[in-house]
Amino acid sequence: MDRDALPFPKAAGFAALSLNGAKGGATKYVCLQYLNYARWTSQQNSCNLSQSLRIMASRHLKSAEGRWTPLGFLKFWRPSVTLLNETVHWGMKVPLAMCLYDLRGDGLGPHAGLFVAVAVSTAGEVALTGWSERFGVHMGLKQHIRSYGESFRIAKEARGNALAGAWAGAGGLWVRNFAWNFAFFEWKRFLHNAVDRSPENAPAWLESHLAWLRSLEKKNQANVLTFEAATLGTYLTFFNMAGDNIKTKMQVDPERYPSFRRTAQEIWAQHGLLGFARGSLFKGIYLILGSTLAIGIQERLTEIMAALLR
Image 1 (cartoon, rainbow, N blue to C red):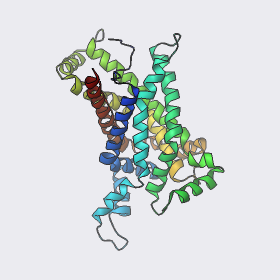
Image 2 (image 1 turned 135 degrees about the vertical axis):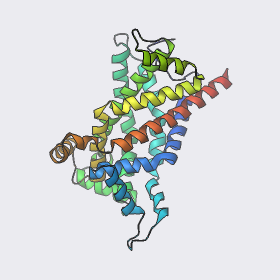
Image 3 (image 1 turned 180 degrees about the vertical axis):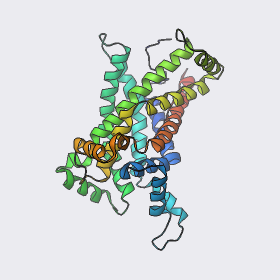
Image 4 (image 1 turned 90 degrees about the vertical axis):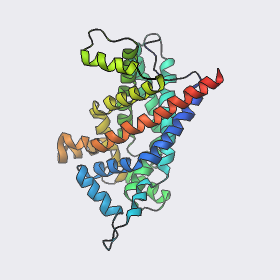
């Protein structure tokens, strides 16, 4: 076993890994978008869990006359461009980082090489999905905006040009994705290596956990390790949360939040350090379950395809 390699199946090729990641991303959107919407709501209003739920209920689960409208729940999946965003995002996340990591020069070790590869691959993610992420947040939280053209016009006028308007919040999106991607890949590799061979001086509780992991079938073991790496990558990276809050505010209200720096300053002035972590509970649940689902589908389907090609 190559202990420096990223532990994802690639026998069927990067194209198969990408295709199956896209399927996982689409499934994630269908099953968990309501959690994504809750995260956006909490970050937009810099509020806690209970306040976010009350805002969501008042917006979509009650009519103007005060009547209960349970089908308003379906509005959490609007606009549908978020489906495209999740499909492309998860289709490219793992294979692009792996491909760039495999191309690293001899002078870069496994950690520095991964850092550079993930920094570049995350820039690719932002370039290809930043515009659709902006549409999803803007039109999802402001559903009186009825067309993509209207949403784009508002952002363009607020930020001064078409490119800045279309990719509003791109800086925060890069910080968020890079922080999570790098932490996730590092933890995923470390955990797979630990299962293969226990770290020196590992505590008893870790040895017990590793023994349990070794007792699982390989496909189930991979899913558990993805879940654990996603959990550690989500809750141990402050910049992941901070970048996400800045990104959401810039995307939903480009007139009030025209730049990364100004948005960060206002969050700090009004809410302090806690303001950068708003929505972390919803985000954690959404990202941990979503990445486990998306990458789990990606790994299993790719392994099946590889077996069929043997």
